[in-house]
Length: 615
Image 1: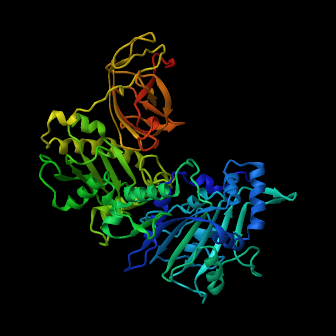
Image 2 (image 1 turned 90 degrees about the vertical axis):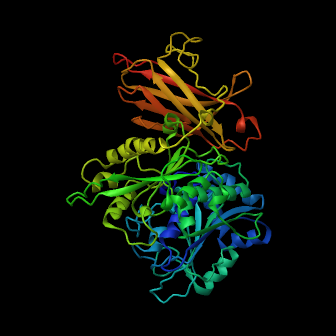
């Protein structure tokens, strides 16, 4: 008996993971010579539409299995989804693409689009230079279904068996459970009866068209696939309305896929209950993303220096990809760093970061370099173009760019959201320590190159002043001391820090901090720190805690978020520690918890004489 499903454990449940996975799947499957199109459509089925849907999906039988799971363990939220149906509604998010390959392959096929998206788990048809090649991307759809049920209606571009499209099938991924005293596997199929297989199989042609219409999942004639996430909900957040969900999908698409959208390699739209027609995602309409697009579009005609607002400078960073095990050393690659000086009207949010992407043209991460901006006295936005991103779209990859493309692709985990965590592919395919090469590149070499580029800027010190207010870090009462930057008081003992400083802003959704700690000891041993965000009132008294969502400390040997708290570890000899933390989304600034006053709470532990100190 499996109490957890494989799809629940494959990828994280942040909403932005849906466009990451869906767009890269469509982009990878685009038909040659055509621009693939994708739309995210949020629907709430009610009345006759709901009744037709429930009848078509054999709800009376399926519901019993849902209730059996909910009765034993409702950690996945099935009871809430059941209650919505009892109340006369059902949320469905449809992810629909056109001008794409669709789901070809027989029911028992291996390594086909059908088998990798619908039938199998952890097996992929993709090549290493494509955006996703882990075989777990489809799991995200089940993770956002309150019923762990996903429907697929597809028109394959290539038909080998003489079938008539469309093709309609569904999968259920419940935990194992008991019903009527009988044990059941939670892995189920929705389809038509078959004498050849011991499970339902895909419906084709007129049968698929009829059922697809009842499921409100009719398929356009163009090749591609429509995916319905049944009982859509956000596992970690249930307060967003359907329109808010769609707006967030719009923003997340722009944030992570603007290079592909700008280059025209894919078109993406969203449609919520308030939208009569799908809205094309136009990345330049998202203010915090527009400066990155400007830098990208001007990279080919860069300036000599950043002496004026809006100027763009590019530079090359040589990078040697290690040889594959048993192979020869590939030619040295040139990675391109593009840096733009912000205009006065550019938003503060998303400054002082470098967008990392390769030939797949999705931003893997916006890596923070706020400490470099503070040192140089100049804000910026930056891009690091790797592999295929460092040449014209559609051009055949050079040997050196191909080596870099595959290397950094192998460095991405299943979520495709960083290059610095380490992967089994990186460990097993390459000679030496590839992870150390990447970390050195991002923590040291990019930092040094940024320093050189920013040094060409002529800035006014007033441009760097921000009102920190009560947002400086403070230390909790402890043996190690408290009271604020560089001093003791309030808790006993003095601070081991010579300098503590921070800059912060609220972008309408999240709180962002750029912090700096300088130890009083010129050569400290290894030490750790924790960083928390607290909401305070006008008298600087704590009202609530705000979870940290992301942390980055370039010199740390470990920087991660555990239960809403940033945890940092620094090696011996690290005296100056820069760090950036972002909070979870907390609202639109209309209430105190959203845009209210916050401060950092910092705990620390110095390794003195191999004895641990509590902070």
